[in-house]
Image (cartoon, rainbow, N blue to C red; front, side, top):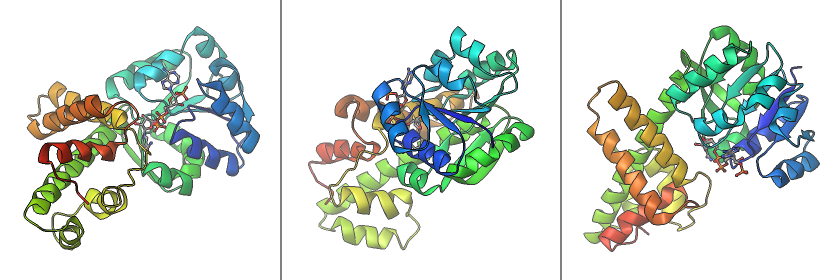
Length: 294
Ligand code: NDP
């Protein structure tokens, strides 16, 4: 079995790494805040490394799941590059940006290390259950080499195209997520004002053509209940949708809704702070409307 290093035990990285350990891969973990790695290694079959360079030294496959591509770029310092095995593969599950991923792939290529961008979708629950969708960019042979590890946490594994293609698909998916959260929030706030309860409105919408993951899952489970669990930070959705808007601009594709979604996410992020969950963006709509969606 390939030996695996997992770097980045955040909200989604932790359950992904847990599944890799449970699948029996020899696993070493590293996290910037060291206590998270130590705790993880105490609870799951794995070793905690004290530095990223130590973590990657014996790994056939290095999995990264950090906040941004820039963070991944940042940990690839001289020590790490020197420690990576020739012939190893870096599987980057960060929701990254295609331009930085291409730079990283080239740096690694010079060290005879392969790179696959492999962002995921399906949330913390999907990671815990091993049902994530994994969108890959890179060479078919490299994706096939990483596949047994990906299968530990992913159910649907799709080769989207060359390096950066996984990042691009993920960013556009996130723009759609933001647009449906925002649109559903506006619709339900307006309907509440005219006297239709959000639960009744969702009952109709979810049996009609306006339904989405937001209307079917996020609003009933998180907004109407006022639970607003913190599983995916708004700051990260802001980052994702700005990547989507940048791709559209780079490709000269007029995409006014994507640009607007990026601005709305940035605005909500500024208003609600670093720790807010993505669904809490709805609170901005509620403030503007002076109407709770409940
Ligand atoms: P978190 O904010 O919970 O965790 C971020 C992780 O990255 C932490 O381990 C953090 O370390 C580490 N990190 C951040 N910056 C650096 C840095 N400069 N150097 C080293 N390590 C760093 O994020 P998530 O786990 O939620 O998300 C990780 C990635 O997965 C993101 O790209 C996100 O967009 C994506 N994603 C998240 C989903 C979710 O539901 N949460 C769903 C799908 C994708 P430390 O502990 O020290 O802060």
